[in-house]
Length: 446
Image (tube, rainbow, N blue to C red; front, top):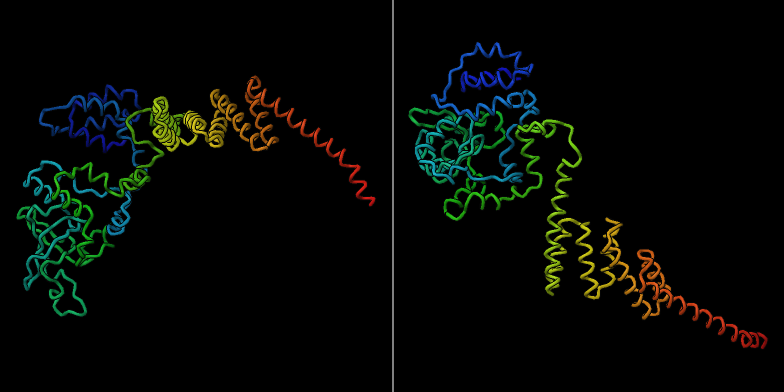
């Protein structure tokens, strides 16, 4: 167990948590090894006497999991290049959640001054240019901390010495105009006087953001979260959920894997408080792929039932749509294949019906209805081929039907008739050939 983490927790909760830990972790040798040191720690509760016993009970019971060093499974990724990240949007880039909440002006302003650090990135608009620098009306943060602050009426000074000189301008300020959008790094923060100074020198950035270019940015390159917050503020119907679902990154099928890797959580050590999920001895049916397959089969079956109901009421188009939807969800769903095959047969599309029944039997060789319907449709198809004088092919279908159901009277009768017909035709052909031989001999002699 991580002794430092335990000590921090006890410092907050006090002796009441330590007593619960002694009860719950009495058989845990890792806890017993550090308990003497923990007893010596100063436990000054910061909860003001209002102790949440349920929280403490949870911590005490799960302490071996909560304070296990194995949580630190991987190294957290460094902040990626913001421009590149926003260009591909691997996950939903949302406006800050506080704009959807009733957080007061004063509280949001205080939170910004509390959380903003040197090296963070701010985006603002130039509102005034003086001989010693220019002033920005701050719009949002854009690196490290991400907040939209346009409505907080904040400004920042960029001193002339914090503006890099360019070869084409002797005066660095001559390159800038009122109204320009500027991306700058936080140089200094006076939290008591509520003053912020910024810099355009790359060296002012924190090491994780050093690849981001500072200076003038066009409107279309403003941070995505800021642009979306502007739209949300202009349209009250734009709820958090509505904006989230409209984000391209929200629909990325690999978003969970990406975020787990980004925060440094390994899927080899499940981050769960459930002890069963801490074990590596999982059964095959516990894995997501198997569970997803079961869910898909269940969902597909609901569609099949809806399709059968449509079919009973004569709504064949709606029934076909439901069967196709079921097969989109679960490609090899046997019930959907059998139901769609029956509908094809009912509509006269015998070949399509046979294809569905055969596929159903490939996935479930003992499916009774699939065998029964395939046998019937093979006989029906054989009769169609008889009418087209394709007797040998028809005979093969009848034999195949009998291999599925050797007691099927219709298949037996059809096979018996076509066998007699083929034999009679063969006999007639032989007689005609024998009768034609003398005439052929005379032709040869002459």
